[in-house]
Image 1 (cartoon, rainbow, N blue to C red):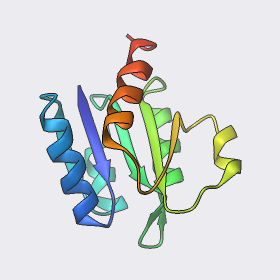
Image 2 (cartoon, helix red, strand yellow):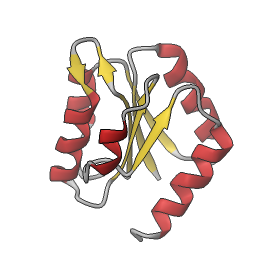
Image 3 (cartoon, helix red, strand yellow):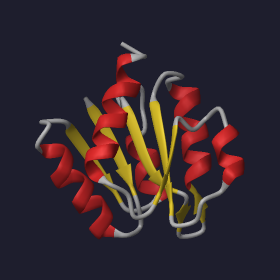
Length: 116
């Protein structure tokens, strides 16, 4: 599985990468929207993005991801829970920070079963 992780907080990106490395999943680390935009293509299986990326929107990144690959799993992280995002068809999973890594891993595996 190939995961694109995007957050302007490098510690969150590093934590996700170290966690997913146990699964032997390929991780691409990005700390900005512009950097993520370079790597976002149809080889990505999962996009994990923060909602706020230094003036850019993680939601826009999720929308772009779904246009590139409709069945890409998109996960939006935020320190604030926004109910309106639950009904956005471009987001598969909405995570409130801080979140449980094991639960995230389980959720990704379950979502992935539905697309393969």
